Image (tube, rainbow, N blue to C red; front, side):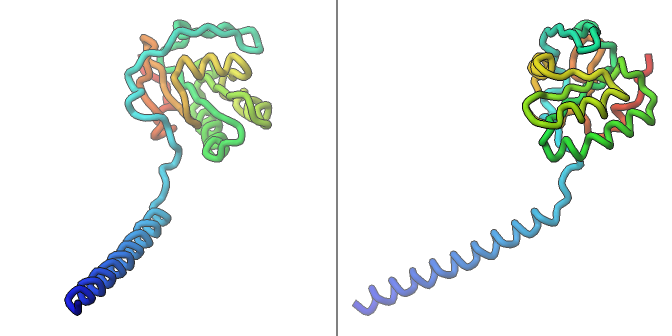
Length: 178
């Protein structure tokens, strides 16, 4: 009987030690995660690079017709959702970077997805440097690019495939040499 009692006490002590060590490890992992700087701006997965755009055809509010076939090589496409924290962080940086690059607005497609207040503010800021797509047309373009998270910034190749995702806005904003 005393051996059984000793085994039970040993098992309880071992379980408490295990819980204490696990708690310490979890605390340590959480503190390291808090101290790790986040990526500057999230983008969709790298598997998207090289995939072709789906067919789409829209007319912007100013009457311009845009389709997967009419996008010039090197077009920068950016997707923003008002109410999204990372989008609000990226927006001024995006506008400033493109303004400095002097890239023509016809080579920049800014898509502001509907659904949240602030869409007009985003569209107004982006209209200085990009062709802006809002409303139902934004949903059409969003589906053609396969966007499911925001913000996303990418470059479109000559044959309508995604050639780059935003890791460095400076790189994406540069004109493409022909």
